[in-house]
Length: 332
Length: 266
Image (tube, rainbow over all chains, first blue to last red; front, top):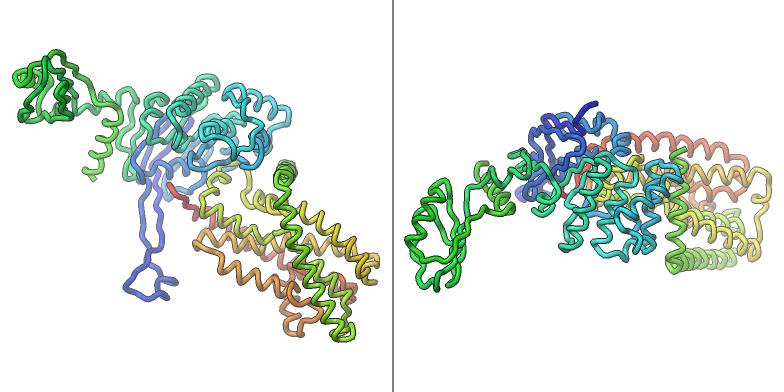
């Protein structure tokens, strides 16, 4: 058995669209418009093992959603090969659809006017499941996703958090082997986000469902995904275990200095060290470890300030990701 | 089998949806009855002014022809264009494309399901009302009437769906199909006999109505006239010709359209 559920080789997608040229007349613009070409995804390759939890991240316009849509057979690639569970999405879209689930955070697939249970039954029929199996699976999902309190309510009356739980449940009605989630926690509050992440972890653990997720939310990546692929300008710039993301990209250390009495003056800092925040009780500095190491920084800071306590820590994941994006932008 | 099961599920789901919003159904019914009723009253008056006969036709035939046009329009098959355009513009097409269904057949069943309940109720009640108010023309009592009516009605449904699906699929290339939709829709209305019953058409216009797909999609309005008894097979042949031709056009346009999909965020 192939250990990979997703294999992508040299995948590219170009979009072309007409642009209005103000220097020529409307007839030319209408019948012979100039076209602009955009390379949304540029020669990317990667593979995903069964049961992996992948964060596919990048800034807006990086090519994340385009990639997901090619993987699910919605968009046709301009070049390259995709193999999802043995299927080529461009040729076997319908067959593949039986094996995968999709959640698009900004779009609802549920029937807005009818109770949630009707949507779940509707999708069960769409996936050609026998009636008995649909009922059994709905009961399982109601229990797993704790839907019982609102299953009989029309979907349009659900809160955003409830709706997203329902969306994920609907996408799992046919027990897919892979679930693709495009920004599933967008707009959710912290409680709803946590609940959704926990549920996704649960289905990954209990049903060995491969999770392929795009998100701008660092919490989704940190708490949910064991591997992160970073894409920018259509190119994969990093592919590594999520736990290594912070370690690999530590270009900065943060040092908190707690004042012995009060800080009264804030002198100029040595090269490589900058103030992050200044307060009479506490100063936070950022150390660029490419320019000065932590030991040297501490020595110089202790020469400058009288401190009661010191705390040295890494940048959070959000900062690390921001740095990766910024570095890849400047290198392009 | 799967297709039939999905179609039945769509009909059931839309029936539930219809029950949830009875007001929408009532407003639609009143709107159709008002439009059809006003037109019938006006034509009744016009026929009285001309001693009851215009172009060798009486009001009885014209009234039933107009009724059949309105009855067919209750199915709202034309709206498939706008449904497809909205799927493309709003990006909902990505949701349907990620499901194990054939997008166009799903959209077709959905469209039929949206109009079928209004159609059944309004049509049955109007048939009863018209029989009592103006009576039945003799052409509607002969043996071949019902089977040929059903046949041309089904062909009209398929032809209308293909015609408006082609317009809808153009939204994969052009942002707004409304101007094209408007032209085609008004052509269908005129050639179908919505404004002027086909019995009163000038010869050149009758020929256009007969040989164009726009008019052919509304051949149900021809069934009440005496000419139907001798010409029905020819008219159904015309419908079948357009069904095959437009079916192929739908197939090839959709094949190209699938490769043109682009939605926000990819």
